[in-house]
Image 1 (tube, one colour):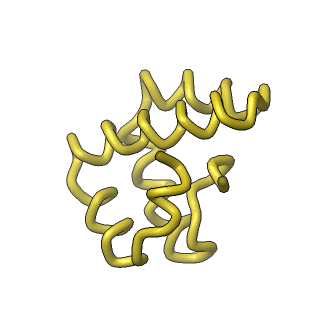
Image 2 (cartoon, rainbow, N blue to C red):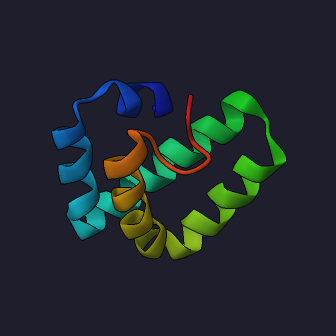
Length: 76
């Protein structure tokens, strides 16, 4: 899911992160797929945090995507 998300156009990424409920679902799917794929402790901790605080991370990731074209700690 992380690779799929990073392959999308920046406009699609922004739209997915602007819609609140969709934002949380996309955050969870991308974070957990990146954590399971890379088996990194940092990515696993961020995935757990996003599960409970996904909306806050979504807005931060929206700005991060505008600047760097990928989510924080979820570059696949």
